[in-house]
Image (cartoon, rainbow, N blue to C red):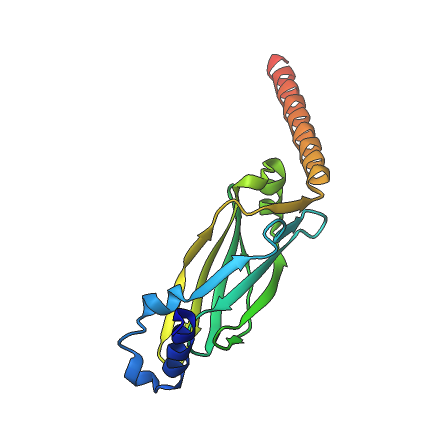
Length: 190
């Protein structure tokens, strides 16, 4: 008998058995290892727009290799670029049948200070995603994470405009400080 066929038959049998009966075999770690989460498309799964209202969008694919229907109950997703760590909200449940996959597009706003930090130090190779997920199935409730996906290719838009604006503000602040110091020195001489 072909190994793949035996595996799929065994998987179907596991899927039909009551959860309490096979809970000893499918512990939290084994179930978590049967769920794969990856950015898609690999070349440009993350997009950051640093315009007036900075946003971040991440595309993920979740694949269920377990023999059970699995429900994604909760997910914390962080986009990390240098010192900026941005939480992207995820407020829905996702059901995945055995062998099924789904693509999700998650987006959120970036606070101004973090957008400025990203614009100051644009480096596509230092971006990463950090995920913590909670799943539920008929066998048990389990967590997967923290998952850290390093070197995520990121398309960053309008960073040059924001960087130029920041440089202008810094230059104006330096000039104002210098002017205040000169006025203070003149008052001290008088």
